[in-house]
Length: 206
Image: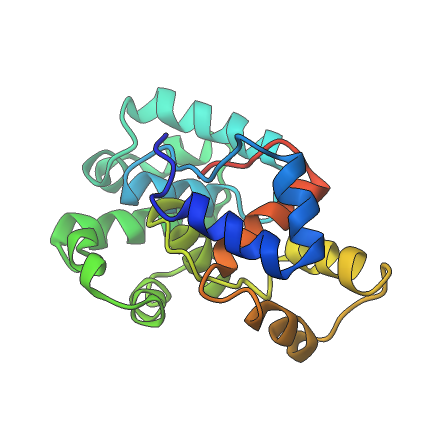
């Protein structure tokens, strides 16, 4: 996994302007953001992991990878739905995966084109796919595209960490979270990543 080129500069700036992040950056030295697949498998993994634990998602993913050999658009698109369900996927997730595979296979989704788009335009493209909402698109931007300034306000982990560190454990409203997060720009992905680590030192990788 390659460390994003901006990471060192981002952590230095965040530590200088935010006391909470200064402590977290010092505590989790040497850890960084990472992705473990291509665009299709990153999105497929996010769909598989929806509403189940990280451990359960990995188990289903391992069975899926064993069934289709390579988790690719062609393999998922042409796989028998019943055999995909046997890997531990719900009917709905099988539908989502096959819709995603069909869009990649036909070229309707072209990951190469997203490099030229801003964050909101990528989110708009991705959320046209069944089963991909804003949160999944934001995870893709952070983990796969390594975009530096994404603030996933709907993420439960971020909500918990921000309430813990910035409001003595009491819930924060969306607008208040956004105001706090705005002070981290243009490195909001990096700040989010360190706040996640404050809850769980083991980094999740998509």
